[in-house]
Image (cartoon, rainbow, N blue to C red):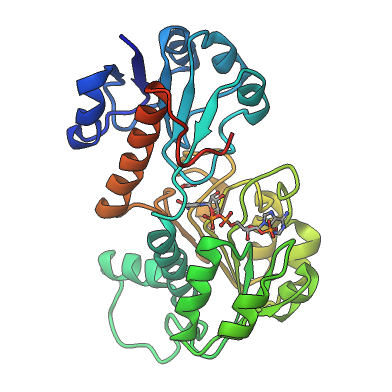
Length: 319
Ligand code: NAP
Ligand code: GLV
């Protein structure tokens, strides 16, 4: 019987279909990643690996997988999988595009609002019993309404954020490697080179994939181009923004605030230096975390595993 190894405990409703046709081996923890040694051991006899963003599916894992046919990643991003190794070994890699677009756009917008209006800090202040009177300039932040939004990575999620911005009467700039004439004419979004976008935007939202090209794309020079009153949101991947440069810019008043759902080395501990800054709003990589969306992502992965192990092509194939 063909085997599926799932690297995290998933809700039973998401795996019951696979159990009917295949031998399903599910890691017992919801929160802990199987150690690399375990992943390699499991890969040796699995026909499918069902992974997520916290798993490093590198060449060692892929080359151990002598019977491996498919790696289904519970995410739209797949920078945690060695694509070259998968390609060389004829293993499908599948992801979950589209179903998480609106939920992740909601979260990116939440981070814009929260960082600009310091809602995290204000709530902590209140919970700590520090609210003794109404303060004329207490927790005064930046206006979102009518501001200029710059989106770096105007794909599915980027467009979702841009559409939401229309309700806030924002002016939208975007930067991609390719222009989107339809979005420009339909919604009035304007294309800008990266430097121009950084210089003109009040809010910069990063939504590119993490690739060799985007790694470190926002560093000291780029942060230096931003307004001192600007807010940077990274809802894509850590590693696109240089964290040391970001720390310096936030600490020295180079930019005003940041909203971060992702970090270079996840999970971060409470001693991470960015968390020491009051102008950082930080979340533990929860972009797509709504019940409906996570279950829809799981359905997509399960259907693709079922397809490959039944000799059909998967719908959401990235390799
Ligand atoms: P998508 O539709 O493929 O959009 C990505 C956009 O980035 C494309 O428009 C692409 O346009 C642009 N891009 C790629 N390389 C670029 C470069 N070097 N310079 C400038 N722009 C570049 O993907 P999506 O579904 O919107 O997802 C985007 C990313 O969000 C994912 O890859 C993932 O890492 C992240 N994500 C995070 C969460 C979370 O929980 N925080 C949830 C979902 C997704 P061009 O190809 O024209 O450049
Ligand atoms: C989450 O980070 C994803 O890429 O879906």
